[in-house]
Length: 362
Image (cartoon, rainbow, N blue to C red):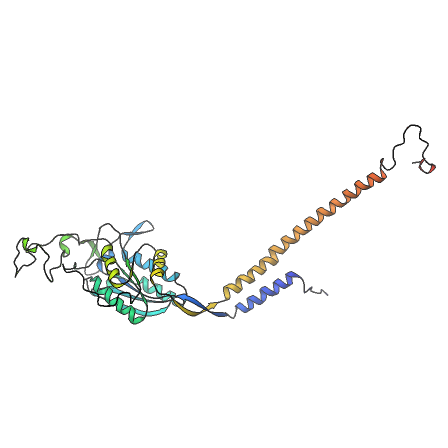
C-alpha cells in the first residue's frame, strides 16, 4: 500500500488548488471602500447632432452615433459602485430617462438604452442650449449627481442680440462637464422628411439665420426696409451659415464659465473619463469585491507549479546530478594513474641496485 508523504510539495499544491476551487464555488465576497462617481448624462438629440463629422472604421458617422459609442465605453470604465443616470435634451429642457443606477450590475440595460438613443425621440425641433443646460443643472442637483451635458452648442433659432438667458443658479453648485460634440469645420446638416427618411441637406433658405425677438441689434436702422414700428430688424432676410454646423466651442466654454462646470471636447471614451474625473466629485462607498477571480488565479498558479514548474526543476536537478556523477570517476582515475602507473616508483639512476625481489616479476 502506497503511503503519501505529507511533505511532498505536489500534494500540498494539489490540496491548495482543490481547496481554492471549492471555496470559489460559493462566490465569496469581501467588503471594501472604493472611489466611485454618481453621474447624470444629458445628450443633445436635436437635428444638428445628425451632422456626420466623426469617423468610425473609416466611415463618416453622426455626432449622435459617436456619442453613443463613447458613452458605452465610458460606463464600462467607471468603477463598480458608480451610479449612472441618462436623459435627452431638445427644445429647451432635458427629459430624464431613468434615475441613477449602479453601472456594473446594470451594464447590459444601460448599454441597450444608450444604443436606442435616436434623434426621432425629440418632441420639438428647436435647440435652446443655454436654457436646456440650466435645467439640466437643476436636475443634477435634485438627483445629487455630477453632470455631463453633451451638445454641439448650436442654438436654433440663433440667439438674440441680447444673448443667452441669465443663469440664476449658484455657480459651482453642481460639478461636471459640458462636452462639445462635433468637428471644428462647418459641415452640412442632414435633412429628413416627415417619415424620417433622409432627403438631402438643409439649405440656406431652410433655417432662420437671426433671431428677431427682443431688441434689434445696433445698425438695424440702416437695413433695407427698416421701420421702427413694423420692421425694426429691416425687411430683408438675413443670410448666414446656420444651415451648416460645427461645434460652437467658445459659446459652450462661456456657458461653462457661468455655471462653474468644466469644458471638454468630445474625442474618445478615455479622454472623456479623464476629463470627467478631473471635474467630478468622487464618492467613497462600501462595495462587494468578488473574490472568485483571485481564488481562481491562485488555484491555476498552483496547478501550473505542479505540472510545469516542479517537473522542470526536477529535470534540472537530475541533469546536474548526472554531470557530477560522471565527473567523479574521471578524477579518481587520474589519482589511480598516478599511484599505479609508471610514476608510482621513482626512476632509478645509473648504478642503482636491482629492484626488490617482490617487484622483479612485475
